[in-house]
Length: 221
Image (cartoon, rainbow, N blue to C red; front, top):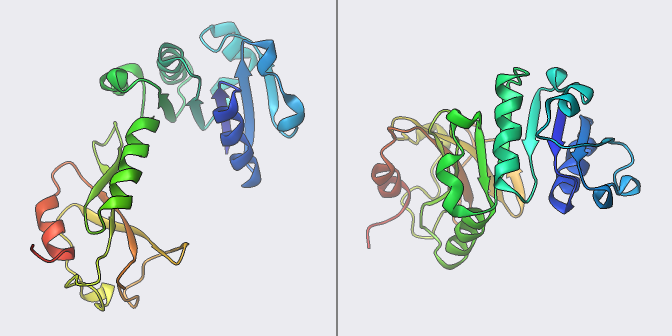
């Protein structure tokens, strides 16, 4: 997979390193020469240019990208980069970083954003998770499909604890994506059994009944 990242700061470089470790091709674009820390991610292709200018994106061969990521600290840049990637270069998937939660409403299809990642929202969700086992927490939303990624840590007195997944009847439009157990992600199978303390990552569609999901996994009271 080929990925073009706008923003070579700490966030962009971290994303690049992770993608490169999974053997993807990565290009980093930044207009600030001080951000060109090539030695920190030598396997990436580096471009010193403005990610909001078409000639720079053409030079980066953006039309060959499978995914583009707006990872700068400027929401305006991330939006314009996503919009150009989608409309001018036909990139299949765009991911954009939201720095200011007040701007989150703009990060949707009208600006070419498929997935918006709000660090403050994710951090808030992690705090909520830490203090409330059994609470259903929304990690983030997929803007294009309006689906949500939800997290719930299964409490010890959950009615679902000890139940084989093959016997669990999930609410409509809800899918269990991953079980994190003892720090390890597990691909769910019908023969797996839910255990107290499991961290469940679920994908819920726009019409999903989250109340029914909460009732299924968490005892009343």
